[in-house]
Length: 318
Ligand code: AMP
Ligand code: MG
Image 1 (tube, rainbow, N blue to C red):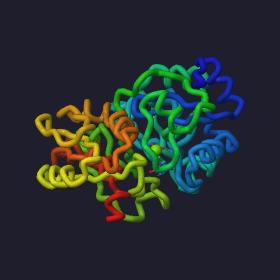
Image 2 (tube, rainbow, N blue to C red):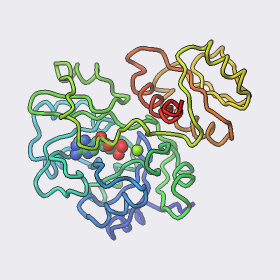
Image 3 (cartoon, rainbow, N blue to C red):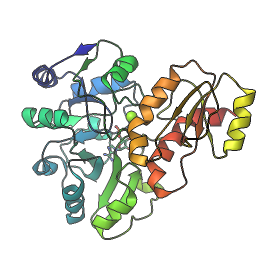
Image 4 (cartoon, helix red, strand yellow):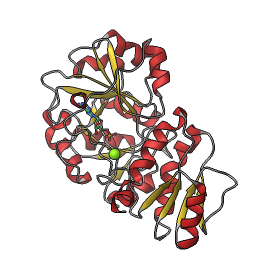
């Protein structure tokens, strides 16, 4: 693995190269968001369609207006409450923000990450860093440096900051003047945002989403087909008929297959361990990964979203 120091990471970023960096959500593949050639390397490395916008990571709240043409009071309240942290704010973009970063959208997505290594890198370099997850498009997100190497190869320089503590991608909220909409669920949930905003989310209309929301259903997928089960009985039947399956379980007392991982019954802990568990099960050479649905409550919305996407391929093939 090509582990690099913070100084080398900054040098490479200033030269227009890509570097994998730790954040509290997942590892990001970072590049200088003002440098279109550098941003193009992100898309090329990830094999991500160029019409899929990127989140710009910044180190200080004062930098918001370097990127956004307006910073409405509602967005300021959310930033004050949740930054640094796993919340991305989508705001009207300043005209000069590169189309490569925002993929032709009139908006820009911004976040201050809550990871000491990422924050130090951002503040030492002063850069805004475009940094989508450091994996190939549609595949599992990395939550360790080893996952980055497994997904992108040994030639990707990695700033190793240990295992990610939130473990799934940020909540994305777009703010229009004095209303907000939830574009992607994450560990900062809608109720926490509504409490700070003083109002519930506005319902999403089709036209509110970016042209390519980048969150199509086939996302966050292991290579092994996944099946999501609402019924443990059906899951047990399937496991008996397909003994070469592996399983990801939430019920502590349930045991189904030779290779299985139980996630904790607490959403934040389960999120922290989710992708590592899927990476492990994906390497188990099973025919199918059987996934037990998490509890049907709001606290599990973000995990349920990722698991539904992980299972989408197998579901579509049925
Ligand atoms: P990630 O997959 O974590 O890199 O997050 C990228 C996602 O953020 C995109 O797929 C979009 O859904 C959202 N996003 C990024 N930039 C914008 C933007 N300018 N306008 C709206 N949504 C955006
Ligand atoms: Mg991603």
